[in-house]
Amino acid sequence: MIDQAAFPWPRKVGLLGVGVSVTHCEEAAATIVEAARRGVPAIVTCQPVHGIVLGSSDASLRKKMNAFDMMAPDGQPVRWAINLLHRTGLRDRVRGADLTFSLCRRAAAAGVPVYLYGSAPEVLAAFRAGLQSQHPGLQVAGAESPPFRPLTPEEDQQTVERINASGAGILLVGLGCPKQDLFAYEHRQRIRPVQVCVGAVFDFHAGHKRMAPPWMQRHGLEWLFRLCQEPRRLWRRYLIFNTVFLAKLTVALLRHALLGIPEPQPAK
Image (cartoon, rainbow, N blue to C red; front, side, top):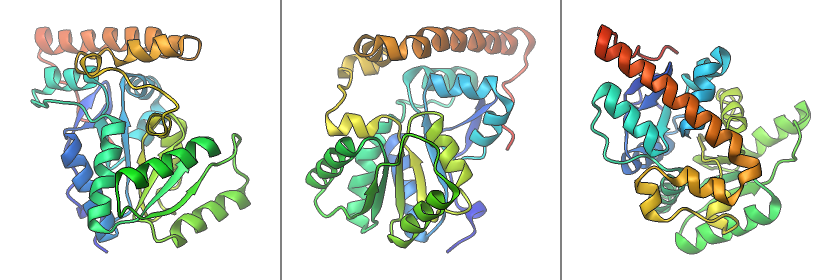
């Protein structure tokens, strides 16, 4: 095992006070698998506009988010924003579903077991079956659907013990944002596998939710597709949070262009 702080994670740049990793899907997946192979505990997440706005508006949450070893840009608007502010030159975002697929492919080849944590039992079962069908040789060390309530201290300790005893190198956490990020942060010193927060990926890969067509994904319209699918649940997230993101980004761009004030680097 090597020093966690010495592991070469992708560099971060500041976006509205939140540190976003300058990385692409294959690099992110390769880095996570290498950390797991070396036994380096870490916490990783993919943040879309919704997560960036939450972090920019809440100092406590922002501090926790900036403690993540990798925060990949999930969503074209996030990628566009860091390209505009920092000229990072990223050609694509790191979508949670794509990262999961690449991770599982690489984990199967490297012999790194994965553990699945989140979603409803029927979704979890379908997700597990789908992963093992798509990635022959993938070792799923365990899978569990937590209750839809806070765990008791005893339940929490038992969960940690099961995950650590499973031999998994990667823990895929699908609890939704920001619940999954808070889970990873709070367990960063106790869970040994690399924790990767993947949001609704369990539902997508299990076939319980439809993914946007590729052309909508390329043009940053995945949010519109999902809004049409679940308007009651997602209208606030997309209509309000997207507007706030655009307003804050505009201020940051004007501050940089007119006053020469760069976007500050994220502070842990």
